[in-house]
Length: 410
Image 1 (cartoon, rainbow, N blue to C red):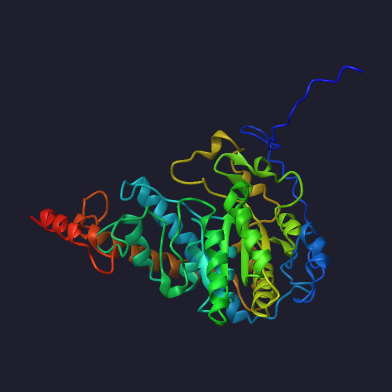
Image 2 (image 1 turned 90 degrees about the vertical axis):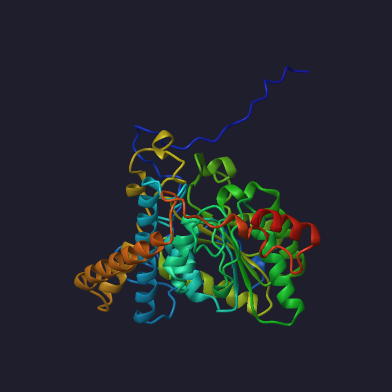
């Protein structure tokens, strides 16, 4: 028997590292309008191509083309534009606050705003969103007060969560925003379970869950797809492929092989691969998947192809693992700029209106920050009271905790 060659394995590497020119040649992009829009009732076996092509509506000229171009009024698009711009301004203000020592930690969503904002404005008011930690745009789009968001980041006297969550791990049931979990992947199985419970009750509300591409390697991802497929759960399962899981290139999670959307195929679930920086494509894909779920045709997996423009968090230094300003070379551009260009091309917007809106948003965010800081930050130590640790845990507090509470209160 001939001697076999030594075995080997491969470690995926990004095409560019610090000091090199950005290289996004691996990103497969379809022409705007080139992808066909199937009926929402189509069998998953007929939708295989949607997992490999890229649903894109907006061309470089800002014009919406193709079957996926949604029917949506300019006024609604301006609402989305405002929410994305507000989210970016909010992120910038909170990043500054962290650098000033007013909070311990922050995570920005720069470059990914279209995904959370688009879903928030397209899904129903009673639908439940199970986010990961870069979807603050949902809260902004749904009108959740910026002051309350900031107080949670500061963990101050007005923090509704009483300082029990890390900064940016919001919870807002009133606007369908499920509590963020630091254990990534859990939101997928929670979303599937919530959707199944809605169906059991005979309700009409659906669920939408989010993970990043790195978390698709977690067992919870596959458990969720198994249950969603087996029971035709009315749920949208989003994979935000922003190219980096902290410092790990998306290829480490398997992104150099079939797309993340294609992982749905083996479970008999439709998988859509969508331009996550195209606000109109976000609206269109969300609308399609939501209609499919509400019509009892089952779940949909959506891979949103986007780019994490900012650091993973304030604890991260991306210059250690990717080229400086790589974001500027991202082939799908900036979601805010692209929607602005579309509105101007349609005659519904102008550069002057955009500048006025930007100034108005900056003023509102600054006013909210001043109010939130008046309730305390880490700099002055006015944080949530330790006496609240017994509240909101049990409906009826057991005797041993009542004794401990009395001891704490002195």
